[in-house]
Image 1 (cartoon, rainbow, N blue to C red):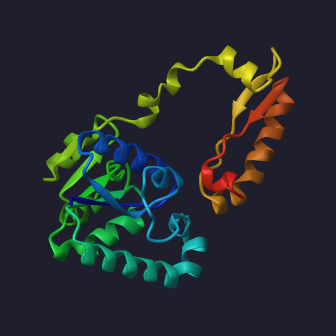
Image 2 (cartoon, one colour):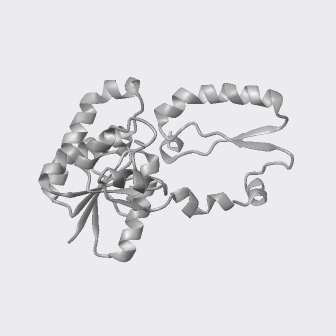
Image 3 (cartoon, rainbow, N blue to C red):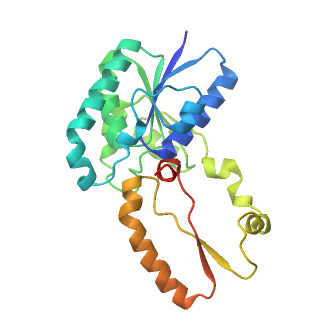
Length: 234
């Protein structure tokens, strides 16, 4: 049995993890999966070690009160990986948790692939050396990322961005209006305050005020709020 261990920390990573599991299973039906994920990864057969939502924290105000719990979950995940000895550990985005986890289990010799290149090319480029020591390969979403990390000695595979693969860029506006019962002449504006419940709770009022100001200038403005699974469940 070949075991692939995946760890995602938020809704976007859950989607990426589920897509990866489905693609791997098409190539290797014998693969087994374990790790931490959300609803999408559960649909692909993952029994999450603990609820992924416990990792979906943002900013010091959310992280500090939960440090002990995060440390326990880190210990739990590291112990599970060490006991299971997977063929590969795939850490998905959420670098504050996943790359620390990678560092913890590095001495076991497990191969580590990090999915979604940390944006060190945009800020704190000095992090690239730590990343090089912690992972064996990066799966990059953007085409300009591989040269940056390869120059630092990190193998990279460009896998493309799921938004482009989904065909979202080629949507049918007329069909969407009918499906959402949007009258002709209304001007929809997408509102995206985040995928974490605490993040949305903190930002939604700010977005609401911005929409109020915009509506005073733009006639028939119609806000549209897509919900990520962790938010929709509340």
